Length: 386
Length: 221
Image 1 (tube, rainbow over the protein chains, first blue to last red):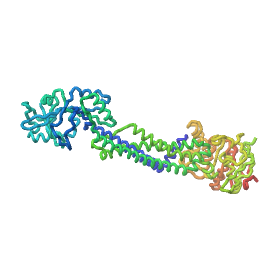
Image 2: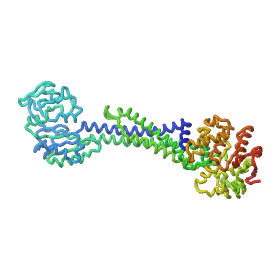
Image 3: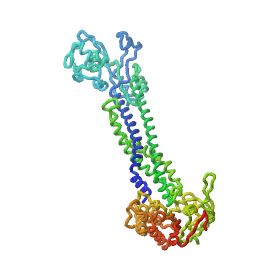
């Protein structure tokens, strides 16, 4: 017989009350676990998507002229004093302080030329980088693998009247159309894509590029700093950040995060209140019992230990169950909440340990006053019979 | 020398502007090995006297000395330690812990004593044997009769070999036959050297005691 025998036996006897107590705290903990896991999983999903899809830094040649387009209508041929970036200079981007945040660099060379009777804009790209950054592209046919293969935008394919597998002639050379893009609704629809080297050769711009897209989107990436760092290593280039979409998404997520935490705090408060009220009721029910303990020589600290041990055991159980239920809830809710269907639950041992620890701390804090109240009971009042 | 020395004990309770004088200058001396019954009508102060003797109710004035220790001069929780080491309590309504078996109830005072679990079980088993319940160690209180519950309560009070056994109306909830059995048990314990102080309103119980102290209106008569 030790003090914990009393706590354990009491818990066994008052199964319904202890179940109520456990559920009360468990609901609070599971709500927190669900919200925290959902928020983390959604953040992770957005970050992943952004890393995959988005170029958010644009590197273009420095120009003394102003952009001659308005509302998407470009007034071609009026840009003057156009400089170009040397392809070898792009390697400098990998030397910036935040180079680890750069997930992809997609250089492009642009130039006009004639295919048959049509003026077309040829874009030289590294297909591997381009396809990785533009995962929304849908191809009819295959991605170009060889130097003499092309990829056509849907509009270009229509105008040139070719489809995948056909051949076209550019400057007397024959090229195979490996694939055609499904309509994207962007400028990509009217472009002809070739490999970077081939396009540079056809356009007479060997070793030069017109622009480069840099993908560096991830949570906490210092985009502003990276823009400055790239501008420093490429003084002849104009480096600009495309942040609006990203910031909008992250802001929405941040608002959801705040709302989640506020909601979790309310639920936890209610959970703690349930623990407090139940433990207080339990102590009051056990007045006689506590009186007996005091009469036979238990110290106040012994009484507190009995009550707090009960609270700790129930809280630990609530923590375990709350974590399990919370993760289950997050798994069920994630497909409805996340940006993509393939979003994955983030399993984090910190959340597991944190939820159990939080349950323990809350349970003990909420039981502290009832335990103190019990320990301060006057044994004669408690027993009444004496 | 007396084991218990009570000198000019007064206990007043305040209720608003009213003051109730439960004990009005009680002097009692009890020797080691004595069996004392304290009798008196309801409100005579006998239960208050027992709670003061039990170190659970600070007197308004006066002194209680037990085994050479001035009880109410003990600091802080030392009074609780004194109860654990020197006193055994038997309550009127048994006050067994309902979710503990007979042997666990008897072991209760040992829960705060540094002793191996095995030794605690042996001590509790012996105490139960002594009250004739060696075969009902694993019964819960609600599986025992009133007399058996009282015996378990006595075994619990005896398990740590207290110097003084305090009992408050131990036969108050028992029929006459069971009451006689319980009183005989107290007598047996006393015969083996145990000092017993019992509060009772049943004059029949007085014949088992060495001496009866009668209280009236908070004073010994």
